[in-house]
Amino acid sequence: MQKVRKAVIPAAGLGTRVLPASKAMPKEMLPIVDKPAIQYIVEEAVRAGITDILIITNRGKNIIEDHFDHSVELEERLEKSGKTKMLQQVRAIADLANIVYVRQKETKGLGHAISCARSFVGDEPFAVLYGDDVIIGEDPACGQLCRAYEEYGLGVVGIKEVPREQVARYSSLKVDPLHDLLFRVTDMIEKPAPGQEFSLYSILGRCVLPPDIFEILDHTAPGAGGEIQLTDAMKELARRDSMIGVDFTGKRYDMGNKLGILQATCEVALQHPEVADDFRAYLKELVKTL
Ligand code: UTP
Image 1 (cartoon, rainbow, N blue to C red):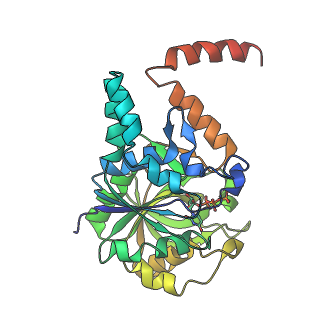
Image 2: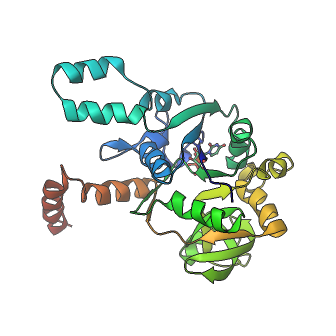
């Protein structure tokens, strides 16, 4: 089976749930302690063996390109002042992967954003990592999905069970267990109304798709929220060939909502070599006052 070496990161959404922070600053650039969310996502893809990445951006998201480029002035200053470790870190960001960009000219939904990746993807399978979903774990979630693609040769979605009261915000999948954390997925619905759920398994943040998805997206009509939904296109794929669901290991943080940002900051800070001890001591004092 063909190896997955390309990834697409859609980062052109309006981020209305995290306004006003996302008015001029893309939510994908919001930091978790000292790194923007999208850098965690690029690093996950690279650890999974991805070599070529397309980031879908739009007006006002140039700082994403700047972040993954060299910053000559800054590098010179760090070099002159002997800050070698920081210099290495800053340089490494620009060398992470071969990253290219395309603009989604109108914000018409995630499915529409993915259709902008057609010429980059060509005739290969590709991974999609949602730009506001950070997943932290030893075994990169994207790699777990790529291995399932290489095993079955079918589209793969990253799945997790969500609380019943939250499933209407996500999607709901019809699943049958295969082995370990793998499932066969034969149907799905985006943002199910009460009673429409197949299960509490939802697609969360990652998928690996065959290039056939582009023909399906060509005729996918606007769905929930008037947007062209990627789930609606994947539903056609699942009904046609079936797909694979991977209940991935790793902790997911939704950087598209305020509580998710706070959880990510808190939990990553507690593991961060520079600040963990002081932050833990601070939190212990703080909880006494709650
Ligand atoms: P979301 O639905 O979570 O992002 O899409 P959003 O539209 O910015 O969310 P709201 O406004 O807070 O409800 C998941 C990912 O897909 C990207 C987003 O940037 C996010 O990373 N996306 C979404 C696009 O690239 N284009 C779109 O038209 C919609």
